[in-house]
Figure 1 (cartoon, rainbow, N blue to C red):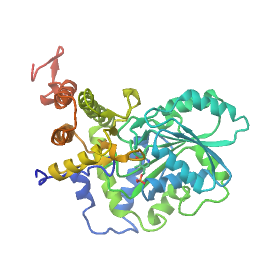
Figure 2 (figure 1 turned 45 degrees about the vertical axis):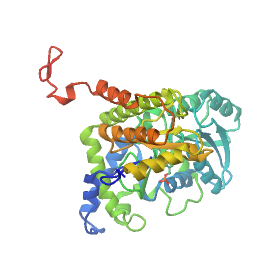
Figure 3 (figure 1 turned 180 degrees about the vertical axis):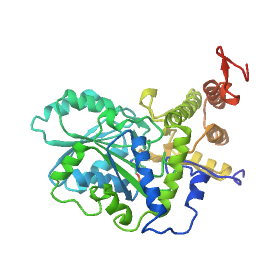
Length: 412
Ligand SMILES: *Cc1c(COP(=O)(O)O)cnc(C)c1O
C-alpha cells in the first residue's frame, strides 16, 4: 500500500549503490588496450591496499566472493593439504567446503552461531598439531549469516602463542570498509573481499590481498590454475592489458568512484559511521526485544558486526515480516541464512552507502510491520534509535563546527 516511491534494500549484499557509482559506470565500452582504463585500474591498487591495511599485493578477479575464496585457496592449498576452519556461521563453513572441493583435508572447530571464535579452543587445536599438518587457518572477520565479528588479531596472537606457522586467511567480504581491519598489523597473510558489500559496487569483481609469506607458499604450490594464479595479476604490464581475459571495464570505473567516496569521507569516519548506525540499530532491537519473541543473534556487543545484524522471531514471523515490509513499504530485508527454522530468521544489511535516515527508515518500517502483524514487541525502538544517533552526532555537525575554548561558536 505504501511501497511506491524509492524502494530500499536492507540486505547484506548487494548493498545500496550510490548514484555516483552508477553514473561512473554509465558509459560506452572503453578502449581496453591502452589509455584511461589502464590508468584507472592502476589507480585503484594503492587504495585497495590502504583499505585492507596492507603494503603487500592485491590481485583483482572478475568474480564474486565465492570466486575469490577459490582464488585464494588455489594459490596456497592443494590436494592433501590440511586447513583449519574456524566456523562462526555459514560463511566460513562454505569456504571450508570449497577447500574440500580442491582436495584439501578440512578440520573444523564449530563455535556455533552466536559467538565469536573462542581463542582457547584454537590454541588447544594448534598446540596438538605438533607435526604442523595445518597449512592454513581460515576465518571470517564477519560471518554474514550470523553477524558475528571475530577477533582476528587475537587469532594471530593465539597462533603465535601456540608456535604455529600456518597461514592466516581472512574473509572480509561482508565487512571491508565497515568494520575496522588492519591486515598487516594483525598478521593476516591472505585477505579476500568482493565489490558488492562495503565497497558499494555491483557484484562481479573480487580481491585477494597476499603478503610475502603467502607468496612464498604460492611458489611451492605445484599446480595453480592459470585463471586463479595471483602472480601474473600483480604484474602490471602483463596483466592490466589483458586481465586474463577481458577487463571488468565498468566495474573498475564504479570501484574508482566508490573508493573516491571512501577517501573523501576518510576511512576512520567511514568506520565511525558504521559503528554509530549499528549502535542505533542495536538500541532499537534492545527495545523491541524487551517484550515478545525478538532476539538479536549475538548477545555480546563486542562480538557484533557493524555491517550486518541477524535476528530471530518465532517460526514464520520473520518471513511474514519481510513480506509485509516489502509489499507495504518498499523495504527488502535479508533472509535468514543457514538457520532453522529459516522462517524465524531475518537479517539487516547496514553496509556501505548507508546513513542515518536510511537506518531510521528501515527501523521504522520494521516497527510498523511488527504492529501490523501483531507480533508482540517492546515499545520505544524508534525513540531509542533516534536518541542514539542524536547523542552520537550531537549538535556540532549541524553547525560550522568551529569551537572557541571548547564552546561551539556556531550553535553554542
Ligand atoms: C557475501 C559473502 C560471501 C559470498 O560472496 P558472494 O559474492 O555471494 O559469492 C562470502 N563470505 C562472506 C563473509 C560474505 O559476506
